[in-house]
Length: 112
Length: 112
Image (tube, chains in turn cyan, brown):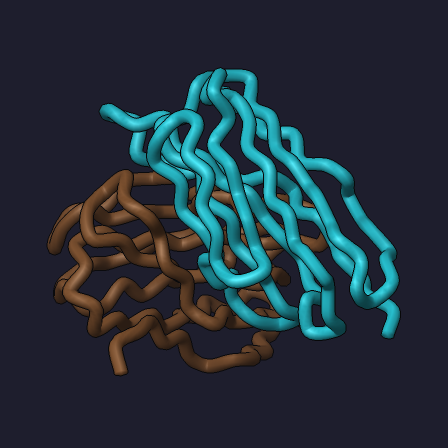
């Protein structure tokens, strides 16, 4: 089956620092999604990417759909304490395969 | 406001009892999904439904059952056959299969 490798597993940073995390896939995806999950809550969609090479921003967040269609990264600039949480990537290969494949998440801790 | 609701937030049950988790959406989405989340793991798909009165098994359907009698509702029953039911359960929906999924707040099930 499809595999998604998300890294790093966890990050500890100081408030104000920039953060980068990425996902790589064993197969080509048509859609990349980035979610954030707070403890005890459901994942919230941050950014959706639908086209190879696409670079999309949402406030301090920027995500890119890799040209090879097998990877994506998420950057957070000038981190703040409320950025704490687990960030998940997810991908879909399209066509008859409508299932999302999820990464295992990156736990972000921001020290004020 | 449009969204996905799951109830209850926390659920306790004795071993051997069936339990039903509620998921309702007012987004007019055709497709709905149930996922299971365990610590340190990515989300795993239990069941999905593309349209009313139709549903398909996901990757870990054993010990679970669903129904889709109404577009807005997709309840999940955790049966006594599920060997390790304690987990965080997430419901999601999308406009159509394969489209971007939006999640509910989750139900934490603890089987004693």
